Image (cartoon, rainbow over all chains, first blue to last red; front, side, top):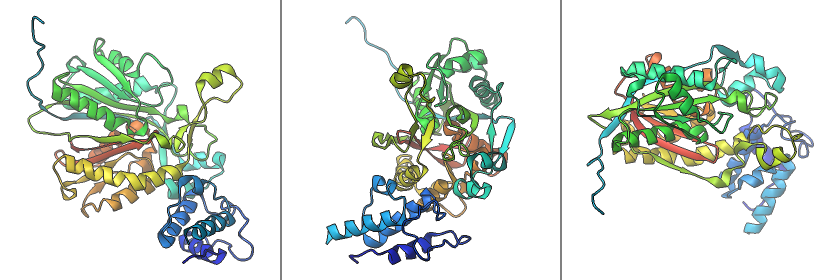
Length: 85
Length: 335
């Protein structure tokens, strides 16, 4: 797997989301903040942890700290995967 | 040289002889804090495990809480203040550089000439103090040592900070450590990771910043909980396994898991990683005490003893961790 798209992220976000909340990830969610999407900092960490496991990446704390929107995640992971090709 | 220095010939064993705690009177439910912090009560409980915590009153100072806990620990051990050779207090919220909280508590107990000092190992303070106390007893430096954890999280956090104000709380716990015919406190496995200062710390410095510009905000506790969670769920289980190994035991010998009560999510994750026996009792006092930093382990132990969930003689695995990313784990026998 050498690409990471917004659809890949959406799948992971839906898998990590609290069952009681169905996040509104239809349409243009990429530039909304995780906070507005009801994903707190621990939820963002869980997203990063799942990506690490699935794509065999090590994501440092400081990179996670910069992930405030879904687009930040897609851009970061895409860049890392390109580097590793 | 005209003479040779004399020291005790060999180490003796140590154990916890008595336990005592002080819980502040006022119980504060999530409902009281949530609106001011812009949080849902249910979110606080789901993400921290805290349902209620105790906040101290103006009269319930650190020396008062520490003395009360220590007095109960001495009574439980059948000892008096005159029997104590040293008072070690783990605290991070004693808002004065000197004198030490330990000397204040020693004096208040009536042991006015006792050796006394504080330990600052943040939320790992209690295991650090216990380890030092145990080594003092083992080496013959003192016969009975009071190891106390006493905290007022309310002195440190900003009541408007949604990252910390629902989590930290107040309380004190104490143990008396003394000589034993058999080992009751295992070797400590401890360390630190100073590179992680941004996970938990303070928002500023008294000196030089605040001293040069008194208009600056008062330094407060700051925490990025996810960084602590990530570190703890990566680093703690290996340390806990080493502590069990250092005590010459295996994980199947552990009856009670007694971690620092930082957050229920960390407690549950680390307990799962350790693959404990199915019947192991896991301390979850955070539910009704919040995170009381250095005091959390003795408070959690007392809750388990008082509720009849654990009995004297059981084997407990303790592990503390906190700012500086300091950590310490050891196996103890329940007093």
